[in-house]
Image 1 (cartoon, one colour):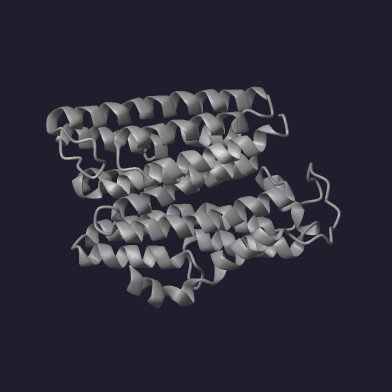
Image 2 (cartoon, rainbow, N blue to C red):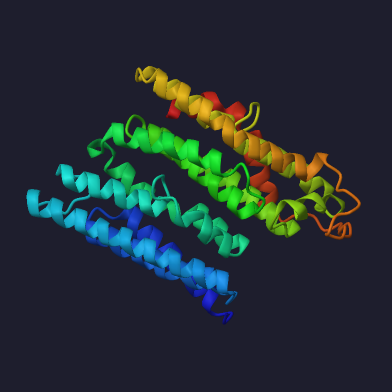
Length: 346
């Protein structure tokens, strides 16, 4: 790829995200989503590998279908109510269409089929963008229309996402696919609380972004694309591998790490809303994803590779991880003591 193309694409991603999250008009929000889609496709397919081209094609087709549904939903609402304002989504058919469109864009179950395949075909840093930044504009649209959405539908999709994200991640050996199913599972936690506490949903997304970014940057540093490569990377960066284990346990939501905070607050809010069965179900289903986080953490630090391993041990490197990786790793491990302050804000 031309070296001048990368900053142009990065600026386009920033522009598309800014337009969508700051707009009140449906057409402007749709324009921002389209700019984002067109800017990320060259980053997915830049290696020119057949799998990367396939991933870019799948991404384009699903996002184009979702964008068409967003436009159709807004036009139906405007036809019925005369309003193009995002917050004035009152028509029931439009609400259903919008929920479907955003679920496709985010990769919520049952529209999750494209996400693991696209992540598997993308480079690690592009996969990071797809898992974090690209989910922010659609999630903003859901937050702005949260009062009009159907709580029962969102709760059903959320529970299905947590269940399926945990279940399908169990037998994966590719790190990008494991993180894709992890993303689907976390989106379930965000979706279940969205209608009842939009601020808490946004907090959960921010903390998920911090933890996932830290894990992706650590995996990019040790060049680990599958479990076997994680298994032999301990000789190269022992400190980073130990930190990676803590970051993965934080993603799993174990106390006393940062990832425990959003799950704790969400379960507390669900019980306040008299949704104790849903809170119990989502807590039990998250144990499925805990298994594959523990397996990845076990591979990263505790297990020594067998002598018959097909991968050579890597040379120890004294070069420390980058400053952003260190900052994100610290935040993804140590934020739990701030829970009372955050709870007061939320």
